[in-house]
Every structure is written in C-alpha cells, then in structure tokens.
Amino acid sequence: MIKKEDQSELVGQIIDIFEDFLEDHNIDLANEERDEDIDDAAIIYGSDYGQLQEELLELLKAWRIID
Image 1 (tube, rainbow, N blue to C red):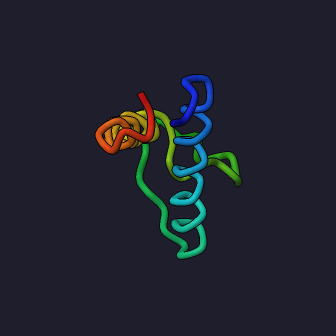
Image 2: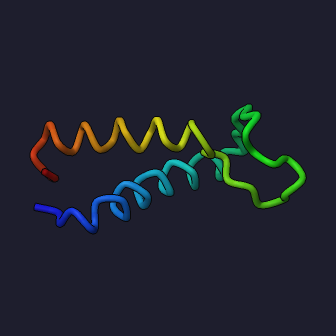
C-alpha cells in the first residue's frame, strides 16, 4: 500500500510517463491555461493535469493500491 504522503508523487510520475510519450511523438495538446511563450512548457497542464490526477487516484483506489 502506498502511503498517503507519497500518493501525489506516484500519480505525478505516472503523468510524467504520458508527458514524455507525448513529447517523444511530437504531440501537443491545445490548452488555454498553458503559457505558449515558454519553450519547455508541460504538455499536460492545469485542469488537464488535475483531471488526469483525479482519475488516476480513483483508479488506484479502485485497485486498492492506495487508500
């Protein structure tokens, strides 16, 4: 079981895997919240990141990987 204080880090690392995948395939997502002027701005950003985070946490809870 993953400790409560480590859950955000776990989910963040999972999202980073998808971020790297998108970057490796030159895929960019339209996101009005992202600052396009920053060269290395994250692809998964703002509310998109929050939505993925929530859904991953629910999935991990359903599989009893986290509380």
